[in-house]
Length: 295
Image (cartoon, rainbow, N blue to C red; front, top):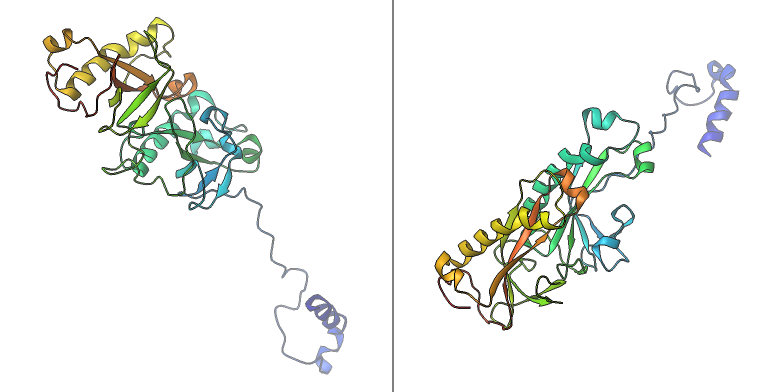
């Protein structure tokens, strides 16, 4: 109806001086007063957003297709922060891939750690960099999400929750890695770790995060070369065990679990979680600071 009224007055403009009612508004030119429509923009996510997924394992989760969910409802992903590509990375016709994502990964690594309250590798979580998909990039999106995914087990089983992960790796956080149970243990490896309280029977304990200086993604025997000695030293320092006592142990060993894959290795994630392993028996106390005990 407003538009009809304007047109009606426009038809009568020649009679304004003769009393076409009311004060004059604007400059009398009706063709230049329409506001321009805002340029369509890809909606930008917000830090603290929560997301749900139909996947059961982190490897099956398509981050760019995750669905927003209220944080007090079941969700498996949270956005710790939102960053932005700049400079040459932002100017390209195609979104950055491969090594070009390394600066964004470094930003996310730091942001997720700050969000959780401790290095993300020390929890039942994984940090994920989510750049815009190709359609979002073509639509002008230059942001990336720094997401954290909650895990039930080391193998990547997702763990839905109804509370935020923010601060969940603090001193009393519920996602901190402590003790657990080995799953699928063989002479040389295990297939998974499930969480357990340290005061209950368990046969594995997280002792810290280690990192490899190797430039190339390790495979085969290269994995042992990249992490073995560092993990051994980490475990002995955690327990406070001397080399002599360590040499006499029969049930105690160590193992490590890489926190990323070949793609994230290229971005700078060269870390693994180091564990103390106990073979053939279980204990019901933490080994932290235990010293030269016989396990």
